[in-house]
Amino acid sequence: MSGEIRNVFISHVHEDDAALKGVRDLLGTRGYTIRDASIHSGNPNDAKNPDYIKTGILAPQINWAGTMIVVISPSTHKSDWVNWEIEYAEKKGKRIIGVWLPGAQEADIPDALKLYADAVVGWQADRIIGAIEGEINNWSNSDGSERSEQELPRYSC
Image 1: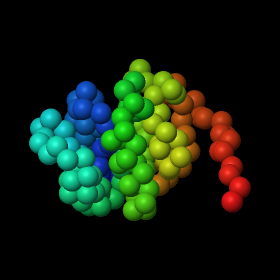
Image 2: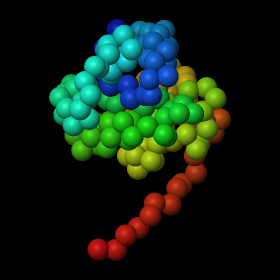
Image 3: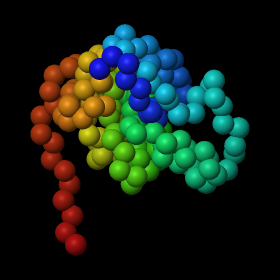
């Protein structure tokens, strides 16, 4: 595991920019180097046109990444951008994992993450790495307990 380099896109709301460094630092303690393509205050996007932001800025960054990490915080579920990023990553066949920020609750999960997450884990380096590597494919609740099976809505054609 030591010396691993991973290209990721960390989907988040801007008030959680500090979590990006937190993820990199946390995984760095286990020898992982994260190359993050997300847009943040240190890498600002001054575009105003939502279609251009999606197709000209976000889509190429998500395409480059092998995995999408979604930071789950109290504000994440309110973001249309986070939901769009998750839906786009799903269409491109990216591995999508959610990571609970300390203090986040189940009500904070974005709708698209509920549908498309490959795994949702706590703020522990080994759990995040396991999810990135595909060794963890289940959901943890915000308190660290394993999430029970969830019913998905069924639609008839």
